[in-house]
Image 1 (cartoon, rainbow, N blue to C red):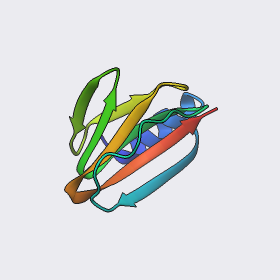
Image 2: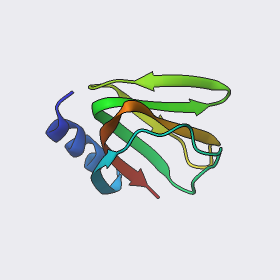
Image 3: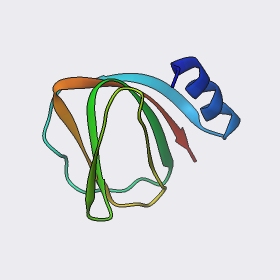
Length: 89
């Protein structure tokens, strides 16, 4: 998916605080939740989200989402990752 198209979709669907983040490699963080929904597009690298007891690796072009209040972890692959992400309050 094209980053501009994804950004427009985030805005259309009510996501705000839209940013492109460059993330260094790291193991999974501790399980946590947010009071907002997250939707992101992986631009480079591997971004791994574990939720509901299942880990999913997202690669360039893949879209991930985490619902508000959902307990999850995030791990960044060995090459790091760059993601376009929006938050929905």
